[in-house]
Amino acid sequence: MRREIDMLNGGFAAKILQFAIPLALTGILQQFFNAADVMVVGRFASKFAMAAVGCNTPVIGIVVNLFVGISTGATVVIAKCIGRGDMSGVKKAVHTAVFLSLVCGSVMALVALAVSSRIMSLLSVPEEVLPMALSYFRIYISGLPAILLYNFESAIFRSKGDTNTPLFCLVAAGIVNVLLNLFFVLVLKMGAEGVAIATVISNILSSGTMFVILLRSKSDVGIEFHLIRADHASLLEILRIGVPAGVQSMVFALSNIIIQSAINSLGADVMAASAAAFNTEIFVYFIVNAFSQACTAFIGQNYGAGKLDRCRKVTLHAFWMDCVFMFALALPIIIFSRELLALFNGDPAVIEYGRTRILYITSFQILNLTVDILSGSLRGYGNSLAPALIALLGICVTRVIWVFTVFPLHSDYSTLLACYPISWSITATIMLCYYFWFMRVALKRKSGGSTR
Image (cartoon, rainbow, N blue to C red; front, side):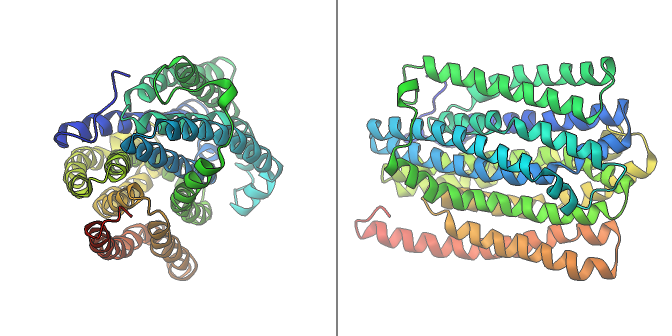
């Protein structure tokens, strides 16, 4: 493939940018599916429909994030095989990843549909929002196999340094999503259900397009129908690295579900504001996460090739570049937060609540950046369990304690949002200490002749 990046030789800065920027744009477009849903129903339906879409984001995220994390395991396994020159291992890992996405997507969709009513009950969704929220969830989750397939396909391309192909496929699907949103809401007069159908169709289009590209590819990461099955050794290695990474992603989604439940208790205005702010601030996170994934892929290949010195340089380059791009996007979002939020809903109360959230979340992204870069680096070395446990402790436990102890004493939106920077601070501190300890151990093992 022409878009592949040579991660094993030469300088880093230009190559990391070449990898990370398309990846960030891909994440932004994926989120635009949800942002378009919220924007269309907020402007052309009602704030209750907007709240119905918004309150689904955390619970959908918990399922999707788990398997996005597992797909990271596929990236690392394939990248290490490439670094070692093991093309047979590449083939086995690629077909195992596709098999895993289809099976897990189908099973999880059936389970989620079976317990959908119970999930809405646990989220404490208000009665006036519940019917729309339940319909949106059921339609959206039925498209889970296509969503997971797309993410595993993207992981396959990332392992070779190609982040452009997933981006181009998503551009086409994103255009379709926006057009269908407008058609279902404005022409057919549908609400949350209409934008859910549009999102499912666009996800099927993006994953289907990439599947065809992989089928036609003659490269090492190309797929063949008759080889789509689970190779035992590849599956275990993908799960060993991917499951902890998925758990780490789930930690954020789990804590957000608990926070969403607290948000729901503050009323429809806060629910709508939180949905609008989330779909604004999240674009900063996609910049942060893109450089983290660059760390995983670059370190995966170089560690597989035994080039530990290059691995350390990847982390340093990715960190300072991530800071530059993160601040470049975060500042305009903070400055123009009111105008951006007005695109979703013109209600003054919704705008002010949304601006409060943006200030709390976006202003402290440097802490989240530190956690993400170090986690991505550790995963590249094949160490996924430790960052997952650190995130569980620093993110999930801290936020749960905050919601159930501090928030009831001062039940306002600002008090609730304070759990974000506090939990990030704790997690970043622990992650930094662990990373430096791990690197000393890794270097010692390397000097003694071990690559692990």
